[in-house]
Length: 384
Image (tube, rainbow, N blue to C red):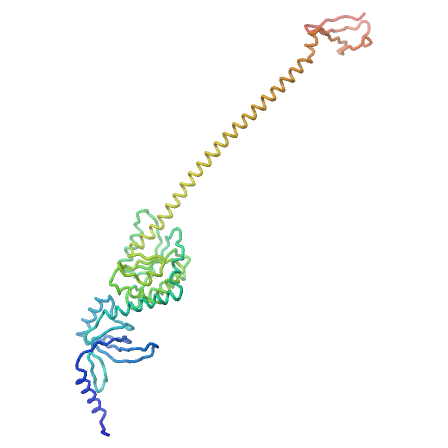
C-alpha cells in the first residue's frame, strides 16, 4: 500500500476538488452561524427530519460579493440574512490543506427563502389550530369605551406618530390615554421583543382596555416576525383584546389572524378605536332620547289618568252631593210636616205656664198666668 504524507494527501484532495468540481453549484442549506468581519463567514448545515445534523460546511462571502448580495437579498425579501434562515446559494467548492473544505458564495436565490417562509407560516397556522387558540381573541368583549390603550411599537416609528395624532385630533374630541411599550417590530429580534412588551402589559392588565400592535409599511417579509409561532401564540391567548395595525396592504400575517381585530395601518387602528367610542356615545344618546320619550309618554299617560281620576272623583262627589241633597230635602220635608208652625196653622195651639207645657188642667192653679201660642202670635190669660 502506497504511503503519503498528510500534506501530500491534502494536496491530492485539493487537486481532485479543483479538477473534478470546477463549476458552481446551487446548494440549499440553513445558516447555523454567521459573522461579518469585512468578509462574511457562515456555517451551513442540513438537518434530518428528526432534527439530527446531517451535514455541515463552512462558507465564505468575500466583502466585494457580500455587500452586493446582501443589498439584493434585503431588497427582494425585506430582511437581512440571519441565523436560522433557509437559503439557496450559488457556490464553488474549495479545499485548503490547512483550512479544509469550504464553499465560496457567489450568488443567492431569495425566492427559495420566501417559499420556505411560506411553509413555516403554514406550519405555524396548523400548530395554532391544533392548540385550539386561533379564535380565543375573537371571544373577548371590547370595553364600552376603549380609551385606555397600551401601544406596542417602535418609539420612533412614523406609524406610532400617526396613530397618536389620529387619536388626539379626532373629530369628536374624545380623550384617549395612550402609553407606549417600546418594542422592535422588524427583524430577527422583533418577535421576542413584542412578546416581552406583551408580558409587561399583562402585568398591569387592569390598567388597560385594549392593546394595539402597530408599525409602518414595508416589504412582505418585513412581516415575517408576525408569522412567528411564539408571538402568535402569545397574542392569541392574551387576556386583553388586541388591535393590530401593522402596515400592510395585501398580506395577512398569522398575528393578524389570531388577534381580536386586524386593520391595514396604524391610522386605521386609531380610527377603529374612535369609531367604537363614537358608537357607544351614539348608543348612549339614543338611549337618553328613548328614555326622554318614554318619560314624556309616561308623564302624559299619568296626566291623562289623573284627569280621568279627577273627573271620576268629581262625578262621584257630585252624585254623592245629589243623593245627600235628596236625603236632606226629604228630611226637611219631614221636619216641615212635623213642625209646630204647621200644626199651629192647622188650628192647634200650645199653652205654657211658667215655661212649661200644660198637658192637664191639674197642672194649673187659679191665678196662674198662661201663654197660649198660636201660629201668628201669643195670647196671655189668667186662670180663674
